[in-house]
Image 1 (cartoon, rainbow, N blue to C red):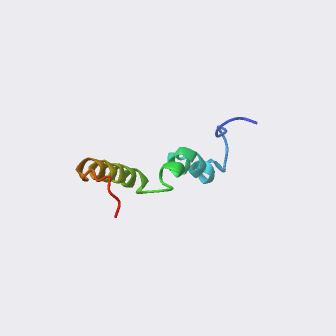
Image 2: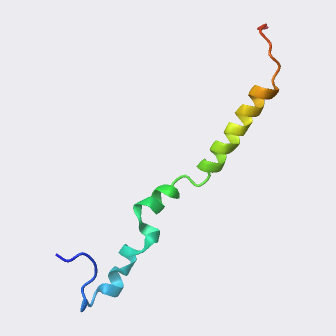
Image 3: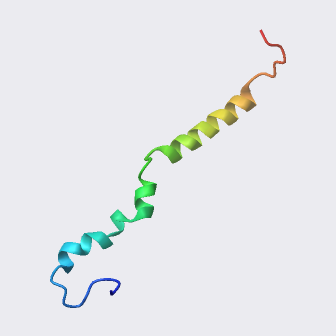
Length: 61
């Protein structure tokens, strides 16, 4: 079986969506969790600021 569309394939137009980059596996994984990258960076900045700005208290109340 040939890889890709055949030259005289009458169904080529109807099958073209399968080869669109919108439906690729990498695209699906990237868009599966839409805010995860921004949230991870924001959480890292928050944890870093908390660590740097918190007072060093060795006493536990």
